[in-house]
Image (cartoon, rainbow, N blue to C red; front, side, top):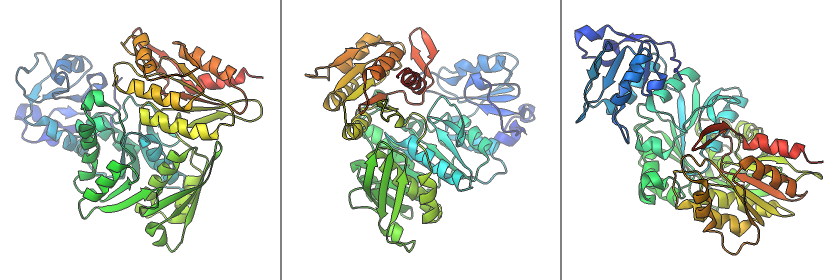
Length: 497
């Protein structure tokens, strides 16, 4: 898993300054925090992590060709022995962002960067912004859960927001004037976006997730709020129908430009859903931001499905207008945008097949909102196929079961990514939230669950396959295997006559 550097080569002295003379001339060809990414000439940066210190992985980095190990001193941390020099650097964690910027973008001006945070909708909003800009002839990079690159050409990446140096490397490789990226709460808590110059911060919503990491909702919200306290932040686009979003907007410091977005007759961009079907949305947009362009209103027609996607479209429009994209161009480009893979991706339908929606919904609120939309769209029965990830927040499992039982006529519980946890125990946790429901089936094999559910549904029915979305792997105690919800659904639909 060697990382591809952007082509920069500099000496350790040029990178750090104040380096001992005998080390200052070492040539650095890459800068990595993950030892598996190290290659010949790399500088391996080792800092304290959540469970261990990076120095433990220095031998691996050295074996892969690292030229030097930079490590942050800490109690019990000792420099390794061997041919690769080790250099202790005080306060290294706080300097990683600046090192990344120095190495990966030494002569480039920073892109206009929009960072999107929130529990649900990050992928869609960031992807819409990048896709719309690219469609109108101004290539815009995307970094997030569904990949990295300039849409539609994305390369997979393992994390929503990669480690700090990988992020700087990716941004340097994009070579784009504009970039829209997802920013997870983990990334904010762990300083993974340190050293970046943020033009626009975007907030979608705040609902329960990641409490296994953050502990409580206050800590989770505080992590999200850090994005809106970013040094030199120019602009914030905030969904103010969300209670936490409204609070963020109120507390926003001057002179940050504020663009408030909502569907409840408030905000500078106010949306009204004119039409909502399984084929798409029509949204009328009004408010001071529209009037400032000389128009009374604008209309967004989109193939995206569901009220929550109206919110996502409004947020994307806010970013584009903040970047001085003309209103008509913004709406025209957004009308041509597709949802990212596995985000309310609708397949099937028509006289022969049920509608099937594949969505990444993996939180109680996310599942609730998707099912609510599909319940209103279904002329027949609503089927829900889902599970929960192992070794993650157990408390949300019964809440997701409760959401499914409120909306779905038929519930099929299956494995998501059980990781090292007992799949039966995960499903038992979900099942505890399902009360007095007539049709609940358990099928651990996810492919079988999907295929049999699609086969059992009829025209007019809607099937939701939730939880994994775009993912191409399934992780269990016995390892990873190739698996795609979308591919499995397509194969299942293909078997119908």
